[in-house]
Image (cartoon, rainbow, N blue to C red; front, side, top):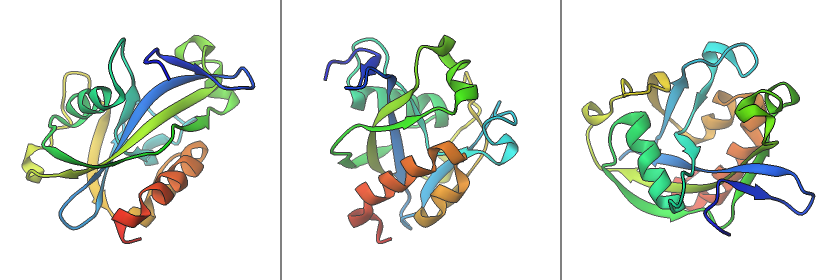
Length: 169
């Protein structure tokens, strides 16, 4: 698949291409951040998620993942453990499909990376140039689907299944 910013599936539905990171600490817990600017439509103050974002220009998925991690949590002190075999897609709910990115995308298709965080918690800085999170914490992997907004829960179940051999879930 090319590194352009969109992907059209066989049904001609356009998805924004992106990446996501499941970051594990030494205790095999997963990093999640509480979203800033969530609003009522996508979960309000209770919306937590793993770092993710779009692929810019000619970036490879891994380059985009490193950039997104640095932009969102201020560090890339990690070791790659695994990469999702396939791109994993999810659809936006109708109320978001028509507003996000000018209504150009029906959802996102993402390449996910499982990484080990090698640093100390003090290296994590969510007060970045363009902050996306207001808080963060480490959680047990099985908690993830309950923390994410409803329309991404299936995505998170797929990610857990993809990386289950590494998570001891």
